[in-house]
Image (cartoon, rainbow, N blue to C red; front, side):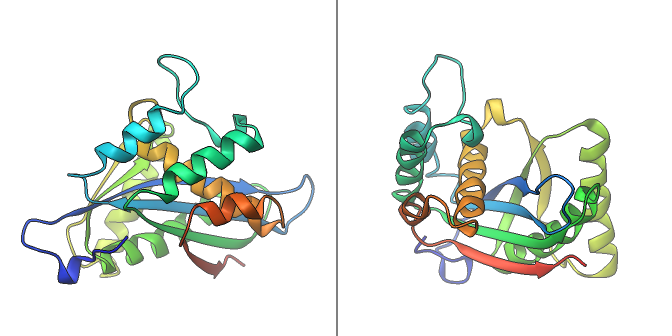
Length: 202
């Protein structure tokens, strides 16, 4: 993505859409948790939404990375890679069994810091349950109280059925996860530049 908040014309804004992914083998404690943001100007994201909708196979459906075969994943990655979007992935390792929420909190804290740093004004997290959504907002409030977040970047939740930009975040998370396992490197390459940030969860 060529533009940044610091050198943008007046009125230029950035929004981010965020999804998670987790890779862990049964009974092992060395998995990874990924929290991915796709960042773009909301005034021009319609083109990205249209490109993704064109790849949906059934009317009223959506894209979901885990349900797609490799040739379809390659098309999705290529469609994302041609858009004016920035991609940021925070990768937390290792993730222990039953510690997904702790991993999410640590990764979300770092991701929100990075999004605030580049001037994102509105962050849309993929909606989960009411309880888990509330935990996300409580974390945001705590980060503001501590001064970790210093702006009033708005954080809210959105349903993936209603927002193709969340499909893009899901795809980037899936492609990066696979690439880190040495799989589908060509699909990861099709995404173009992705800022991958590693953090320790232990």
